[in-house]
Amino acid sequence: MKAAFFDTTGTPDVIRVGDLPAPEPKPNEIRVRVAVAAINPIDCYIRSGAAPMPLPKPAITGTDFAGTVEVVGANVSRFRVGDRVWGSNQGLLGRQGTCAEFACVSAEWAYPTPDGASDEQAAACALVGITAHLGLFARAQLKPGEWVFVNGGTGGVGSMVVQMAKAAGAKVICTAGSAEKVAAALELGADVALNYKTDDVTSKVKEATGTGANVWYETTPPGDFDKTVEAMAPRGRVVVMAGRAARPVLPNGPFYVKGLSLLGFAMFNMTADEQRACADAMNAWLAAGKLRAPIGARFALADAAKAHELQEANTLKKAGTLSGKILILPNG
Image (tube, rainbow, N blue to C red; front, side, top):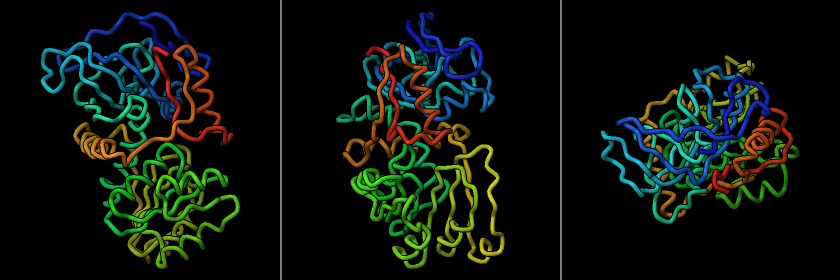
């Protein structure tokens, strides 16, 4: 089969595209013909060595997938040949990735693709949707009627936070970096969208909410929590899930006087059962047309290295040349 893989960590040019043996499923696995894979920042961190993890050799890149079941392992009863499935959590912790014509996936990390949802949308929503759901509900315990603030309302995780919070009956404020992205965030359902380059975000959040945000979902590496704490409502919850090297300043007094909570998590450390609960909710929203991922770029498998370059340029260098998810089409 054709696959995008690397033998050693490094810059995007360590990725090669070539032939590897098609994998055979273990008893608890399914083999999926991958229609769409997706690239996320974590894929770049793993490939570069910034997120050290055990890796197969060679290591196929890619975390998310959507496709069709081709072979079912002996102990798998949940899926049948021909089922459409999607999932994430591949390409890390020793598991092979998804940027290939086929991927063998443990059944616990696969979910049925609902009728009406395209493979592109299922793959594009996978990691970012599960991450958003874990932060909003498993960690922050979001309630209907509360105010959610999220940085980057048109980004991968941010766009999911906007839509999920609205679907759960919350109100949403988000930021974006241009007038076009502000308009896109409002189209996704945000009640208030601010341009972080021109607006005073803290004062605007307090003005819109009255008492401040109940949940602050931080999708970017935090540098200083002074303004965050100022914009929070009493007993608010701050969710962090980005910025491995960040060492933000925390205003201790205002933080505890307001009774705030700081909640962190890494999606790939959450259990299969915890992630399946997210996928079940996502499937209901996908089927109802309440969840969609903006797609920023599509690449053929042969251009997987270019996909990594684009992701890194925007995640690490803030190039601003990407709005939405990066997809890889193994058969495109």
